[in-house]
Image (cartoon, rainbow, N blue to C red; front, side):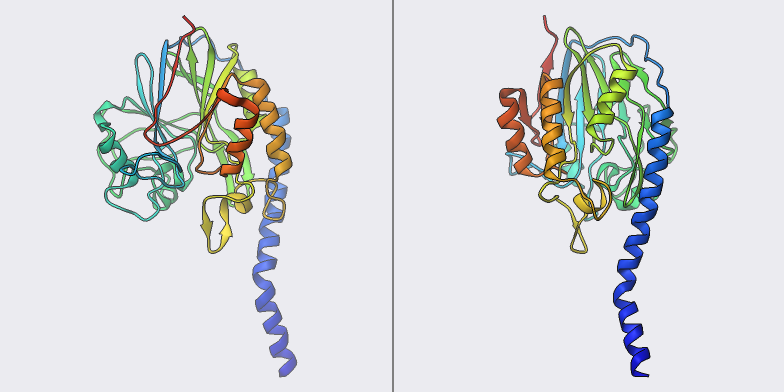
Length: 330
């Protein structure tokens, strides 16, 4: 009886470990299949899709801010204004189901009305980008705890999503969306927490090139750059957004686990992203980009310091309420 109790006790202790190993093994097998499919895939060039002379990216939700009256959290939302269009890129986290949500609060403080928005662009269906865990599970999104009428707003998502009384367009390949605006199309990746298909928004800034707005960077920087080069005839000028560098640690812990580093990056829970990967990508981006504005919802402050040391005034920290302004070369 004593031996049986000991065996059961050991199994009780090892159960979670065995479960984690099993999930990570499945992640590895799925990731290998995705890599094989990626290597065989072909991408058609996106035809000429126009330009914009002006671009403003206003961070509505992210980790840093200089203003005490604005809310911050480990989530993402940007308001993007071009010559002709206003785009809401992602809808934050609202982790604690607050009313008003951090997004709604900041929109009010910054004078942004829902009626200002022409388009909603969802980078990927994770809780910190669609307004909360419940909306992610429901394959939907929301500004706050209740879903409001969207009116004539166009909505683009990289996977099938729904919204009451509204049609959401699924983007499954690089394509133009409107004048001067396009999508990279979804780039798939298998994380420990499951598969994610993430798209980035592409803005063609007249006389300069492509400005790419990124939600989380789950695609990985090398694949994102590869997709941009394959799909567009215009050179890359800048990246604005979040690229997922939770090194040495992330912003979001769940049950004591560094979720951003252990569960949502690297090559599984036992091989998270490390400093070597970060340094290689800092070098790559410093060579490829004329400008980078990096958000901190999934990136450690130490990585900001490294980018500043390498890129100097070509680098800017994203802060809620501080607009990032880019114009044409003329």
